[in-house]
Image 1 (tube, rainbow, N blue to C red):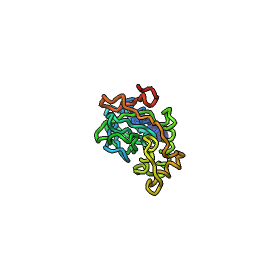
Image 2 (cartoon, one colour):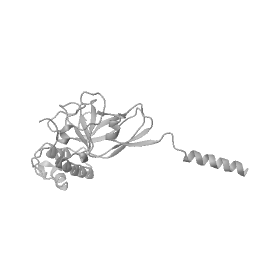
Image 3 (cartoon, rainbow, N blue to C red):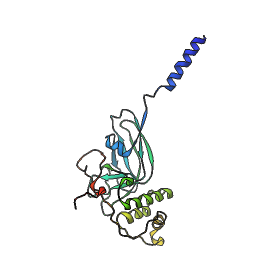
Image 4 (cartoon, one colour):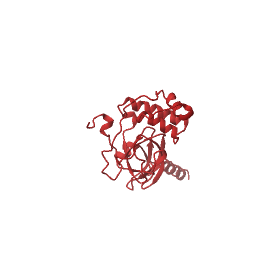
Length: 221
């Protein structure tokens, strides 16, 4: 009897300690895109929850997609806006799953609004850009996150003041914009040349990871 009980306990322990056949892998957005494991699709618009992710049907194990503030989404259309992620989110995915929850703001004031259904690509996160102006934007995104204004038009105006030299007026008219810039230690109304990348993968139909030449300052002049 004792021997049978010992064997039963041994089997139960082995079942609990054995590696799960449904092990989950954690991948950054850039890594998942480079491996072709996800497709990013615009929901239309640039402000707020604007993109969804579709997991590849060939996923061999579950995936936690680590989307982080400062990740950059490229529009395959040269006429439409690129976007930057404004809040961290971990998105659990299984093969073929579809999920939303990617919050963004726009990086290109003078371009068209991203169209619903447009497939997006992934560029290196702002932290990898060799640009002093990208550092300013990183600080601003931290403040936007702290204030929880991920879909606020004044937060968007603050971003455009860095990326596109949009003029900032006082807080009576400008709302939260001057406060966000002040908290981020960014001087308003200072002329800057922020990189505006085009997508080298614009002719493809799937999501990929790419480093546009504008980010590195190697684009043709």
